[in-house]
Image (tube, rainbow, N blue to C red; front, side, top):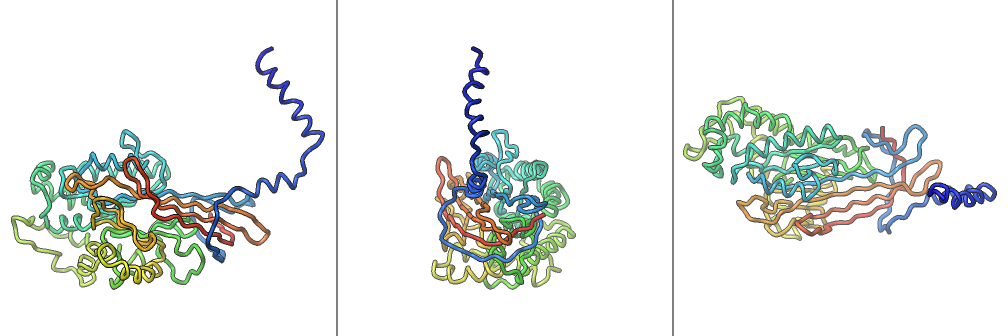
Length: 405
């Protein structure tokens, strides 16, 4: 007997039973509305937020549905294309050909692509290519200027290798590329000093300012990214992140409006342009977001007593930064509220290859006419060659309705 006939002979009696003795419809609905979840330790009330995003959770009379977002962040790359490719492939950002994989929603790089190695041009062109590929696939690349990008822009070339200058075709060609050329233009168009990345689209797209008048369980469901750190005493922290990024954009335009300064060494160091404002000088100062190291170097007691205030003011749950390397692992402090992801990826340091993964899930549970119970989970993982380490695993139960268009 042919195989399809055998299959029909087996299935038909079962179907007949369901037709003659259909199961009660309330049992089918009950099974559909009770997925399996993990246990939760927190319960938060949520007032109804309004927002925009590409993933609707409610709308058009449809049932609420799960929402997920995966973010990968990588720290300082410092002129090492092969190690950068290894890290991004290891984290699932790119495939074996170095192209956007489509496996993540956001890829974040926290600055210091330049200096200490010879692959400056290759790395910036690759980042531009990934940005375009990600956009075409519905993903996003968020790029940041580190202190080394700014150093090179203002002529501080202390960490530039002679062999790297050769890849540009000489000093003058390198100056042009970093100012009016392709790299300088990309810095202006595609790079910011800091970012606020919402975990849920109801909070708006990346770099939407935190609104301190919003009070609900998702108001701080966001991450901040910066190269150095967001100091608790920095004067221009808010509104976040627009104030910092406006200062950075203005200062970069001002730098590019002047002829490139003679590189130091061998010439004397000239510093910021003479028309830089006091706020711009503070941006580039030791307490500013490009150079601040307090979250990495201060005592556990000090940083954990200060971090909540900064998170509250910036509308975030965690601060992610590079700049201060730990050559053995990604550093997590204060239960994952502070994460430092510079592990010396470049061969110039010989540190461990690493990436940070954040997986966010919001899943609908039981629902009533006026309210829905949601299960929120945020898993933060350090990725190394051959192993993963969970740095934080936070779970919440949230009551409310989300209207996300």
